[in-house]
Every structure is written in structure tokens, then in C-alpha cells.
Amino acid sequence: MNKHKPLKSRDILGKVNTSGQSNWLRAAVLGSNDGIISIAGLVIGVAEATQSKTAILIAGLAGIVAGAMSMAVGEYLSVSTQRDTENALLANERRDLVNHPDEELANLVSAYESDGMDPKIAKIVALELTKTNAFTTHAEVDLHIDPKHLTNPWSAVFASVGSFIAGALIPLAAVLVSTEKYTVTITFVSVIVALIITGLISAKVSGANVFKSTLRVVVGGAIAMVVTYAIGNLFKIAG
Image (cartoon, rainbow, N blue to C red):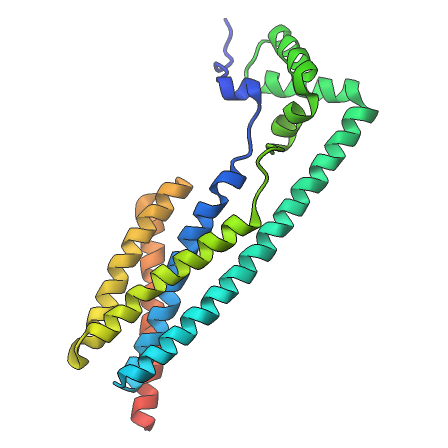
């Protein structure tokens, strides 16, 4: 009896790298979380130190610009490095196919066999796919990289910057529209609700445990706001 698990069609065609397609979504989720938490901490700290809406607005806008620029540079450098790594791996794969074609074919057959394919069928599939497009097949199976869809640093930059600004506007708007007595409370509640939403989205994107993923985001944001609130309160007392 064959105890191997059935092979799905995507296994036959290779394990396509989805990082290029989902990278912008990861950047968007992280950007929104950063925008919400960092600006929430900033404006709550300033709001506790002074009730001047002008001062809060200036601090918030400065924080948004600085944060967005930081996100853009960080994402561009990170994803560009990842793309360079992918290109280097693909270049090595090209050389191996030219210099060691038999070994590469054997590795491909072995990969399909490890996925549960019958050895005879694995060799037939490997031979056919190698004839069709050896480089793409080996890149997808050996490296989990789709040569036609490499990671794009600019998509990550625009996604992170846009989501950072969108997230940052939530606590800033909450501070500006709330009354003096309930500024911190309204902002805190608004941020917690926003973080719950982004936590749920983050868990959905990553496939992580929904409760744990959301709890981490909410607790991290709450701690940031409590700390900056305490710092703002110290300056208020000192003033």
C-alpha cells in the first residue's frame, strides 16, 4: 500500500515563492501598526504635558513625517537586500544547471519523491518540466523562488508609508477632536480598537493564532501609551 500523501498540482509545478506578491501586504500591516502605536504614544505624551491643540498637531504631524520616512527607507533597504539575495541564488542555480545538469535533475526527482510522488512518476515529471523550462522549475522547487515575481522594494515602500500615515491619523484625529477632559481616554480607546482590527488582519495574513497575535499588538500599544503618558505627566508636573 502506498503510504505517501497525495501530491497537489502546485507540488508538481514547484513551490512558487509568494513573498513578492504578499510582501506589500506584510509591509502594510506592519506600517499601520507602527503608525498607530508610535503616533498614539507621541500625541498622548504631548497631550498630557500640554492641552495646546496646536502643539499636539505640530508634534503629531512631525512624528508622521519622520515615521513615514523611516518606514520608507527601512522597507526599501530590507526588501532590496532580499531581492539581491534572490538574484544571487538564481545566478547560482543557472550555473549549477550548466555545470551539473545530471545532479540537478537527480535533486529535482528527489524533491518530488520527498513530497510523496511515486519514484517512476517523479522522474517522468522532472524530465518533462526540465525540458519545458529547467531554470524556472529548479528555481521554484529548490529555492522556492518564482523568477518572474521577485520581491519589489517599491511596492513595500508605498504600502508601508501609506498604511503608516493612515494608522497614524487615527490617534491624531482622536486627540484633536476630543474635549480636554477626555482627550487621553478617547485616544486610548480609539487606539485599542484600531489595534484589535490590525491584529486580526495581521493574524489572518500570517496564519498565526488570532488571539495571541491580536493580544501582542494590543498589549504592546497599551504599554507604549502608558509609558509616554507617564513621561508627559512628569513634564506637566515639572512645568
